[in-house]
Length: 95
Length: 486
Image (tube, rainbow over all chains, first blue to last red):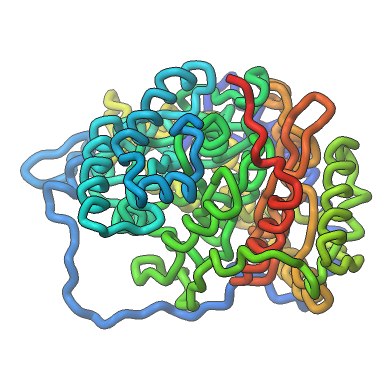
């Protein structure tokens, strides 16, 4: 097996996911198959090859630091699952 | 001819001559949706009222003599393109009730040109899939055979165009998600050059690969939609300030002087259906007969494209999808005592299995100890794929290839086998890795009567050449005129 049950749980945790216990073994098996396939990349000689992150060469896109129209507070909050007094409400963070 | 069967160009002609109104046309489309969408399942949301209101505005503008080629034309959008006030789900339960407070830049452009937005189309959740079976809401059926997939991830867009439930549509393509469903449903689909069309307001999947493009009934309509949606947008830092030509100016007869490249590696790819290779070979011969000169080219890193893509795309997705945390918008799982628990239960309940699989795969590829072996290596192989195309385009104007290795497969045939499903993207995803444009144009039917598409690819920003070849081929063959029986 290319990826263990424990690794799936660890990576899921890093991804902020609680994978269903029933799915963990299935995921481990499927991800293992995919990663084995991805390992074919190892046979490609990439010595000295610059990696590509964007296919179109680009530089930083700057604009003048002028004030621009943005959302008003109501529309920014309109889709919030929980809100109060113009704020997003989340479960308690500190004790 | 029924109104809903019209192309953009035909409908525009009738609107301009005031032989029909946009309200007639929009009503005909809404009736058509009522009649056939129960069987096809292309729409997630139909905006009947807003569409009729937009049609009324369009009619007023036409009566005052103000019209563009899109004024009053009913267009439908893949449900990951934000529409102000109209629900945008991205095919996911996590965005089931999301009402965008703004329009995507392409929607602004369509509305400015007077188009009528009919509704939002089904897709694989977060555009992750090749069959639309990963939608969080419903299955979409291929209009040519309702027991088969429409392709994906823009399956709703392709099925809606093929079954006349809109006059034209927009989809998005990260690894073939416009071209493959276009091929499976017998319509035209274009993935533009990366940076040609603004991604502002497109729900992000893999930002270095995603691109919005049209799915239409014919090549002319595709050019008309591209005229509307293309161009630089300061709101998308990756959009490119490159001149936008009038794409309809490339729709002229004759391919003399055009050199078409045939990749040696594509004919030896395993698992290609004989009906597909026959149809593509016949298409190449036809294009030669129309005056183009064929040359053999080589894209030696083709076989590594799928592996590189399935590292890069999930890596970018794992980062992009971190924003779904149940705080600012979207679903939240309520019964949690801590913030961390809330994040985890929200994401686990809100995302479907394919999305979770890809987030985990991407996080794994980016995690300490694996980064160089996976993401780093895949990005280097991406460079080699880019170089392959650059070299090939030294000797040819466009490249001809299949779109998908097989015609549309049966619903449920591959849902438990992600790798096999991924491998079906082999001919399309290299264009995303290289950022080049690619179009799928109908080129025949399988022995079972299923549509097959021909793919044409060109250098960055040379969509014009795609239109020219696709238009000549379409005019000479007429496959696009055949309709499914519904």
